[in-house]
Image (tube, rainbow, N blue to C red; front, side, top):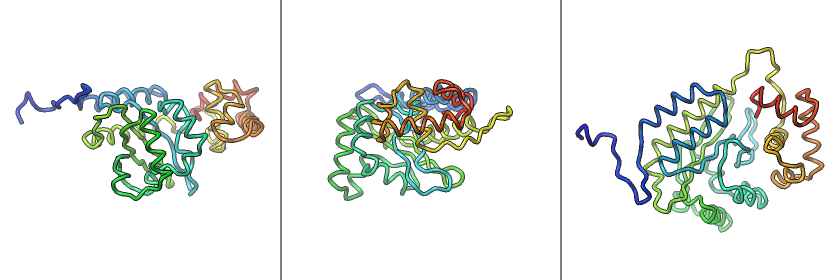
Length: 261
């Protein structure tokens, strides 16, 4: 391969190309930011240049716990279509989503399209994939990410383009996912500023706190996380108490400063 052709990739019909240097830019910028949202925006920007501008990142298991958490993470680490996220929660798709099941079983990245070819999926599992495509998530790839104490996280990339080729982009997207995961781990390290960083919020409390930070009412949060409005208020009362906050707004501010959300 000559010097001129090195690093050049043919454009697809949608005008996308692989841009290797962006990976190095991502790693360099990721080491300089202390904001999860800024880091996620940077990840989306790099993935968009690969034709995969829909991204979700989150944890599937807690340390030393075997239970499965919700697949769709709270903001700011997801930009899937909001209508799809709401339907996903309302229909309890996390219990039947074949992507979730394989993320917890496979030690390597996998294509969503690959699931229908390699596994005999049940009709309800196929429905989840079909509705995801209708929502604009036409081709996807999920990258399992393993951390300390048995923690399992993931990054999922999806494309709205019919001609997207996740196999061709797998290596780059997988490297981006890993770099992002490592950068998040660095950002969320305990702070040495005299703060109590080991705040024992439960997964549900953290989830409710995220949605409060997004300006959602207790009623809306209840619909999103599938609990009653009273239960949401109960969780948030515990959050306020645990953080030593004056109210919910103050709890969001404290949680943001302590990098809990």
